[in-house]
Image (cartoon, rainbow, N blue to C red; front, side, top):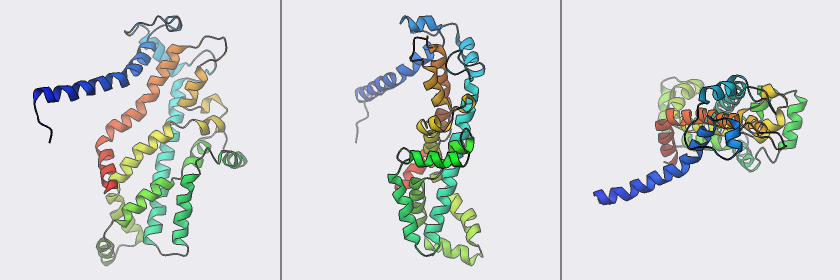
Length: 282
């Protein structure tokens, strides 16, 4: 047991604040850079206080875009990333719930073989099967579309495994009680299993949303039009590697805007996220 005294509390708090400062300082520098002129950043003379171009730079970032590599405004990129992340998240959760439900509560030939086939796909990430996946998406005319961005990433063996393990902890007496009450498979799934899985779904929602939001390789391959770019691809294209001047104030403003949705999801779902992780561990 840790003794509660003034000196004993001072050291953990000091370590905590030092850690927060180390993590938050680069983010603060990015915010400061997004409020200055590009020449100040390029000359390496950027001050540590915000500049006077906050509204001008962010207005241009959201509604106008850069004047160089990609002229698409960041508002469109944010919308593309949001649609992609939400489609991947809801799709993974729905498919995983149904597949885990079928594996645990239904008897059919090769049931366990089907589960192990799903489990084996954990060893085949999209980077490994990138070429055949791209070929199939191209044959189905999914290039430069929201379906092409999300569908190849919409299944999750990890989520299926987590839901299967949770469903196996549901007492058999609950299943028998539902049968006596006259509930069929659909009603048992909707009225019993879904409410019990609420915290697990919330924890997975946070993890899968951030996974979908931060996707880089697949959107880079599947999209060629500027109006279908995601925010991660947009940041990469804004950084000029030739002799042209990179508009760092726009790049930093885009990076700040790109952090807002994942941070908002974590903050809003913090309690359910923690509870879902704890219950999963049980």
